[in-house]
Length: 403
Image (tube, rainbow, N blue to C red; front, side, top):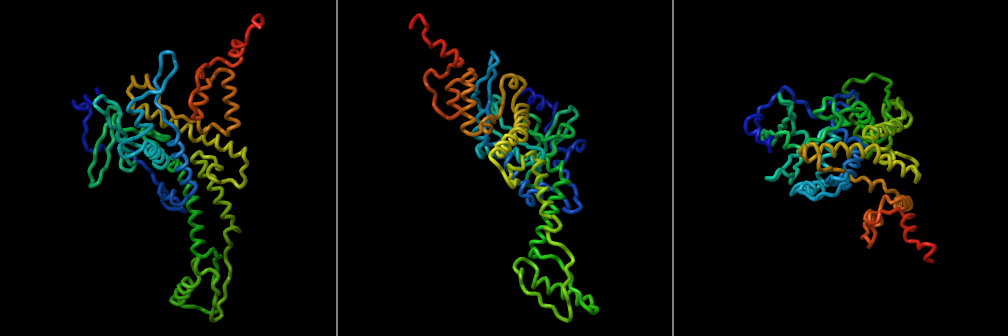
């Protein structure tokens, strides 16, 4: 409230004048010698593995519960009920579910390096809605005071300026601490190589996957005749619909093979290695996106664990801390905690899960009802006791003198 008051008094002006002193671009494109400009849209339209990595990270993180806890005086915590908790777990705004907004934020992180949403508050300063902002429409300015201001471009060339307290800004890894860089921007050289290989395969497919060859003529042909022969040959034999048609040559012309097929130049093997590089760029185990010829049960379980530990856990922490920084006040950060519950992704199979439950119950780490709630079962009477089972059995066992 004080920040908005200072802004109204002129300490920070909400003006649409653009300050070019600090205006970092949202995406630094680079030209690859084989693929041309490497942009997020080009990466996603050419590389199926990149599409799966982005969708897997965004959908998985959006699917796990995002909870708001209140800190208690004894160091424990409890679930908090507030408008912010409803926004993060139910409806982000009247037009979007919380799942859709969180998926949008993670996709923006992976493709643009920054995710933005406009914060809507009620008269008490509580967050009641989050409205997504396309990263391509947002420019970040740093004011003389060190604070940030966001210029949002709109249809018709108009712009709206939002203050720092009005924007949820989640950054990917950053060079300056103010704007992030996506995995696509950081590794665009490796991604450009993968795109170039994909384009080679597309060209081979467009020509019926037949090896290139030359047509030799015993005599000398005029430039016009050469062009006519090439066009006629392309019309009759190029493309998958002309594959297998007989080749008819006249006037002593002979075909001469001058290239190898895709397997002979190991293009397919190179594409496989490039797909593994794409998975590494996003921190996703190759087996999780189908890049494994033989997957055993044990390796699949390990890949699932690696996906949560190496890809989702750091991503969840990045989003959680950005939510606490932008949506809570200083006092609110001392009182509340925003946290993803990744335990559902780490539960494993039924045998391993119930074995861990048994151990936790025996030492008193979990009560019977807590275990039942994890399995979406109703609690039972007397099931909230955390006494270790051995101590509980000793207390219930009648004394020898009473027998």
